[in-house]
Every structure is written in C-alpha cells, then in structure tokens.
Image (cartoon, rainbow, N blue to C red; front, side, top):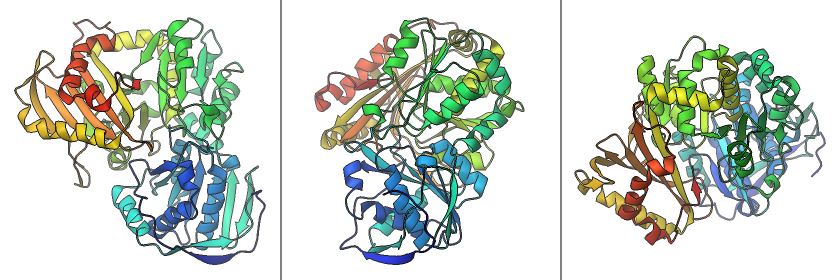
Length: 552
C-alpha cells in the first residue's frame, strides 16, 4: 500500500477464531517462514500480545524498523496502525523502513523509548520463500528478557482478537512528521544517529588517513541492511574509493543470497582476501547488521580471537581509552578472551548463548566488551551486538599499530597463546534425528568422566547451566560440554534460530601455549577431536550427513 499521511483514524477490534499456538519466541525473537507470517492475523496476533505485555505502551515512544527483507514495509504499516490503537504517543521509524539492529538499540536508548520492534530474521534468507522475524527489545535497547518473551507467548495462547486503527498509511519514502490519529509518527534517516555514535567511539581522522593511503578495504554488505550505513561511513566520510562497499543496496531477498557473514556464505569476499593480494582488509555483516566477519590478507580472524584482540587493544580506541570494566563471552566461544582478561586483571564472565544474557552485566557496569563465536561482538555503547562497530574497531587498531591483520594475530598469539577453534554446523537435520542424537549424548554425560577421548582424558562432562551474577536468575540446559584434562573441550548445542529442521552445532577448542606450534590449520590441529566426537555422538550415522554444512 502506498504510504500517505492521515489525521483521522478509528479503532477496530478484529476477532480471532482461535489463538495461534506456535508463537513462542526463541533467543532472537519469533522467526518463521515468510509464508507463515502472511497467514491472516498471524503477525497481528504476535504484535497484539507484545503491545499488551510491553510496559509503558500507552503514552510511550516506540521504535520500529527492519532489515529490508520481504514483508518489512507492510509489517511496519500494520505495527503503526496497531500501536496507534494501543495508545502509543510517538512511533519512530526510518526512511524505507531500513534500520539495523544496532542502530535500533541506539535509537531506543537515545529517545527514551519503551522499547522497539525489530523486523528481521537476522542471517536467515529472505524473500517470499525465505524467512521473516519479529524481535521485541526493551527500554535498555537490548533483547527482551525471558520473563517478557514468556509473557508474550502466554498472551498469544489466549488471544481472542486484536485492536488496529483504520487509517491511511504513512509515507516511508523520505523523512517527515505525520499523524495516525493521536499518535505522532517520525520518519527519520536511520543512519545519522548511528554514525554520530561511532564518531564518539573511534578516531575517524586516524582511520580516514589509513583508508586514503595504500590500504585497500573490501566490505560486503550482502544486499542487507548495512549497505547504506557502510557506504556513508567508509566511502563518504572516511574517503575509501567508490566500490569499496559491495552488494550495498538492501534487497528483499538479499539478492538470492544467504546474508550470513562466514566463509561459506560470504565466499566471494573470502576468496578475494584469502587467495589474492589486492586487498589488505575485508569485512562483511549479516542481514540485520549485528554480526561481522573480519579478514586480513590471507588471514581469517576467528570470531573468538576477534573478541580477544579487541579486549587486548581496547585502549587504542578513544571510546575505551580509560580501560575496560570486564569482558564476557558466550559459553561456546573459545576461552581466548579469558586469557587476556586475566592478564589485564579484569573480570571475565561465561554466559549462555543469546545476547540478552550480556544485558544485565552491561547495565550493571560489570563489563565493557562482550562477544559470541557466532560472529557477534559488542560493547556498552548499545545493548546489541554490532557488526560495523567491530569493523571500525579493527580499522582503529590497524591505523594505530600500522601493521597488517596477520601481524596483529601473530603478536597476539605470541603473547597469549592460541586457542585452536572451530564450529561445525549440521543444518536442516530432521528434528527427531537431531533430538535423538542430542538426548543420547546427554544421557551418557554421567558416565563419561575418566574415559579417553582423542588421546586425552575427559575431566568433566555436564549440561551447562548459568546463574546470573546480577539478578540471580538461573538458566539450565544451555549445551552439552566435554571438558578434557588438557583444557581442551567439545560442546554440542541444538540451535533455535532456524526455521527448517534443526541445526546441530559442534564446537571444538584446543589451547596451544605461546611456546607451541601456533601456525597449524585449525582443522588439522583439531582433527583427532573431530573424529572422536563423531564416533561418540554418532553424528554421520544419525544425521546421514558425511560432512558439516558449514565449517567456521
């Protein structure tokens, strides 16, 4: 529907024949196929439940935007009409409805909003045959806590209808001020506020001097949300040559690609850096802009190592010159950051997977940096992981240290040792097979300590649980861990962020001190552990897959 302003509206109650029973949010909101979200009343049901549960809706400010995937604009229109019907005083959205998840977090905090509704399925494919998602963020700018998402789910199970304002729509084609009944609607440029925040954290003049010299940068926006942000930052402000940003126009289906910045789905960028010498630095971000991949010339930076390097070099960035309060990582992420934290004398926390677990630590001032092995890093500047922030942080380090990425990594390993690390993803496994494999290994855990595994002894085996040090909340069942007697470990998890079948993730880690061989290929260094976990868990036998879908 074309979007024009309206000064009048009235509220209509739409009945539901029966509530939907499949709207339980996962760690990153409600993700389903695009076709499922096009089911009549499906989106409206979840939004109605969210607006009933989110505190402060009546009279509050709400931020709404998304990554530009199929269904984005239509969903914003529906949400605006429902927000007006629920008494929201002001709705803030963006031109084209394009708003990265990090930028949304910043806007929520900057505007004192009650929260935000972010339309994205992150790194999942888009288009009519792809996926769509809705994520609710709280007033701190971070993902809604489990207590809130549980309440939303409970509300969906008892809905008998929803409220929506009958009104003509609001134009998203350019900035402007509009009214939907009593609700004010601001359409703003979604890039400006984010850039202003980045300029507070990093020395843009120093980075510009790097990019205007002989340093060659390639950035792949993957036809996703970061294209407009990256073009403005790297090409317009920092002076990188035109064409530095590749695939920079957001498309509803991401150009038919899979907007997941890893060596498999961003293989064209990886080949440029890993097989050639034309570029010094490469980076990519995902669908909604919260993940990042970092590459140097013939050098891939593992996300776990990236967090450790940022921690070790944090004071080189103006925004972190005063040092760090602490650092946190998700449990499957390697312990590389732990070693740095110990050397710096700062706290290091191990949390379950899911950015929301970092929120309490950030709000309490216990940590400054945090990250996950799934290509996500961030800090206390917002309450989400932030892909472009990580890219700028790396450019800041390279500009100050005046050396290539490979040298940064070599010196880091020389000081702290190397955590050989890899993640093997087995995607789209039949749910029964995936859960059967997982439950079998879970049942074996009590008997595993003392057994031999890849030439090592199993020191402990458990189902990871976490007690939040801030509020005392407990999260159980966060992954199966085999902890070996030399500090190595293997972790198994079933992912909840896909929409087709199940994904088994196998994480492998082996520590090599600085005196050891730091130049091995990770798959070679971990080969015995890879074989051992396949034998123990019967992965190939039970999944029918000869190799992982993705190796990171």
